[in-house]
Length: 63
Image 1 (cartoon, rainbow, N blue to C red):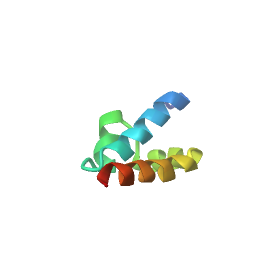
Image 2: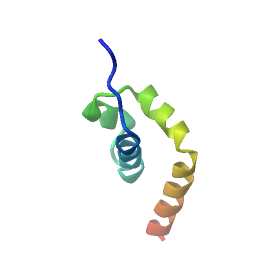
Image 3: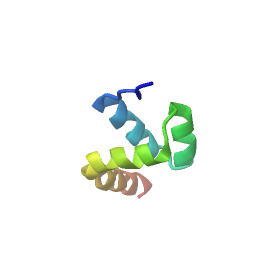
Image 4: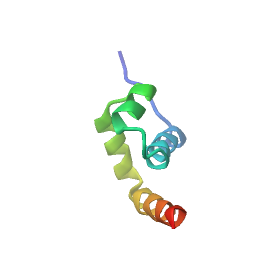
């Protein structure tokens, strides 16, 4: 059985969900979407600028 094909928009949305919900674990997010944690981390490699951007946004929100 072939694997699911994820669009860039879906990948982006799931990655942003992981950044925007600091109280939810990566495992829980992956379970909700039916993906492996390793896949989420692989997707994050496709968007290296996102982690820095999300960190800056969180820092701005906290202050």
